[in-house]
Image 1 (cartoon, one colour):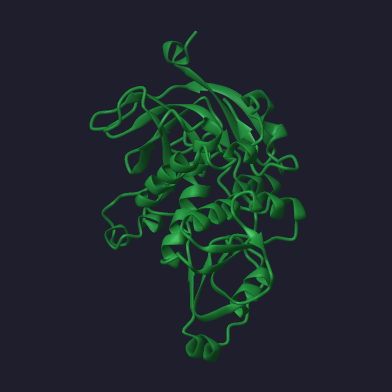
Image 2 (tube, rainbow, N blue to C red; image 1 turned 120 degrees about the vertical axis):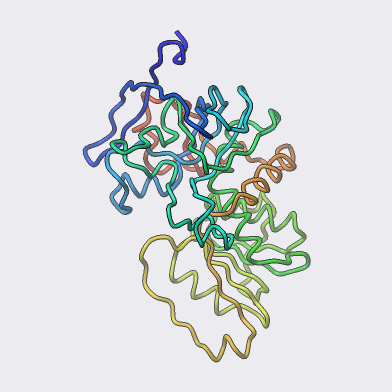
Length: 337
């Protein structure tokens, strides 16, 4: 029987004691809210950090913030059509606070985050590891063409959109020498996007297999020489320091992987001044970046081997098997609830 008919949905609830599957009541969407049937969710590294104890997160909760699905119910004032296939932002924002008005909605003073809210709070159905997710007003949704498979579309809401924000922070790419540190999903996506933008891209990662994967998306080997721009998605202080030291005059370093505590990196102010250097950070993204993510994936879906980056999905019953690093040769595990 369809879950909407029986008014129940199945969810995977994580807590420090493990993951438990439960059936819970389906909510009626309120003003501006959407109820989405999750087709596929990919397993972001931040969820692996939560499960392993490296990252603090509300407990119990429904994890999962990279997903794609179809709208099955909409509250008053919601703009999406029933049946529309969508991806959504990590953040639910107010749109009215000082940060939102300045254009930093990702840092909204009242931000709530998909896959990061307590199951015992007022938004229990907030994560993608469930048959349904409730998207409150303030979450950005973007329609996804049917030509883009679920495994390609799902990462748009985190990895791909974050890369689009990082590229915007770097500005002009055409003809530039670019270093990408870290060949996880964000790094490989950045390689593809920088290459598409006309840059000469080098990849740095300690793992040969990941470097080889990045080459398939447009990277060349790293010769250790100077670069005009560097992106760090590794979060490694060693990698950040090495990238900073390689910036040529007018160079920019964009940090996006440093999202957990790590050793400090020395910064020589004189070198920054004399070299006209820029160091900036990107955390989460703005609605326009999610739109660009879907546009980029749509434009490259047949030209690049995106499908090879995501492991075959498992059902919700087997979710504990994928809440750990994915098999060699892939960058994300996935769940089809």
